[in-house]
Length: 120
View (cartoon, rainbow, N blue to C red):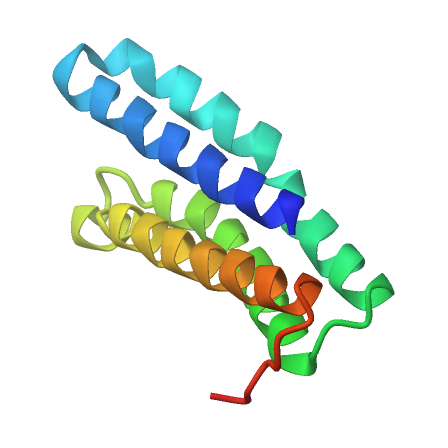
């Protein structure tokens, strides 16, 4: 549960850093990139902890999807100037990652509290 909320916090910091890159100068994108690579490892930790913690398959599936979405971030950015309309999906995918992280944090919190986790 704590790792999931930590991940969400890290995504928010990453979004802020991207905003700095837009409004305070492109040199700030280096911090955004490096931060992303640093906390990206949490996606694997979430998947491993979910497996060890015997969380429901929906959680594990979302954790695996989050790992894939996070990997996609690096791929999308490589399109850069060659395909800017594809590269721009990097920002959209960032918000999808935030949503998936929030879902995982919320569901893991319910699981830890012993509340019934419905398959909805």
